Length: 310
Image (cartoon, rainbow, N blue to C red; front, side, top):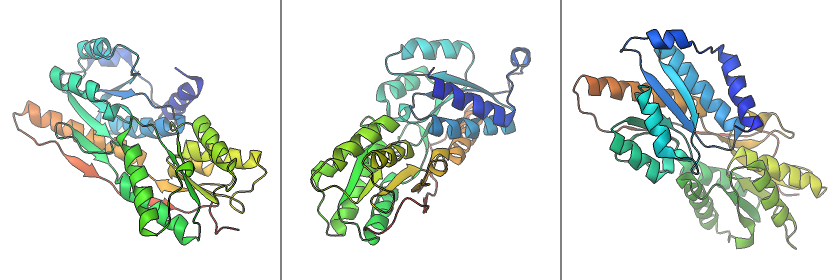
C-alpha cells in the first residue's frame, strides 16, 4: 500500500474511532452482514472520502466492512475466492473497478451481490450510485466560458474509466454550443493523478499560445495545474483560471482554493451500502429486485481559482 493511501485509510479510521474487533467478528450472528470495499484508486483524497462514507454506513447498519486493494495486475479471481471464504455478503466497487468488465463478470458468475459507486454509465446487472458526469462537466465549461475565456484547456482522466469520456464529452459539447473551437493541443491525457495533471499543464503552458483557463477532470490534476502555473511564474487566477472536479479535501487545502464540481463521494458511498443491504435482505426473503440506479445531485462550487481572463 502506498504511503499516501495508508495515511488516508488511517485518517478515516481515526476520524470514526473505527476499531475492528476480531473476536466480535467470529461471534457475529448470521444476520450481521459483511461487505468488502475493493479499491484501486490513486487519489488518496478521493479514497479518504469514500472510506469515511462506507465506514459510517457500516457502523450505522451494524455491518462489518473489509477494505481490500484490487489492482488489475493482481489475481482478482483468487482474491474474490479468498474473500468469499470469509462469508462476504456483497462488494462495493468505486472507480475504476466499477468499469472493470472482467471483474464485474467474475462477480456475476460467483452470484455475489455488488454495488457500483460512480460509474460513468449504468449497468443492467448491478445497482449503481452515480452523478451526471456529462452534465457536471458541461456546466463547469459553461461557467468558464461565461467568465470570458475562449482558449480553454481540458485534462482527461483515466481512459479506462467511463466517467472520463463523459466529462470530455460534456466539455466538448459546451464548447461547441458556445461556438468556441476546441484546440486539440489543449486537450491532454491525464490519469487522475497530481503528476499527470502537472505534466499535462506544463505541455499546454509551453505552447506559443497558451490557455487562459484549464479544466481538469479531478482535483488532484487541478492541483498539478496550479503547481505548473507557479513553475511558469503565472498567478492563479489572474493569469490562469484552474477548475477541478470532485471537491475532495484537497480542493480547499491548496492555495488558491479550487473552483470545482462537488461530487458527494461520502454520501454516494453511504447510499451504495444502504442499497446493497436492502438488496441482500430482499434476496434472502425470496423477493426479486431489479438493479436500482440512483443519481445524486452535484454542485458547482466557486472558490478562488477562477476569474475573467486578464
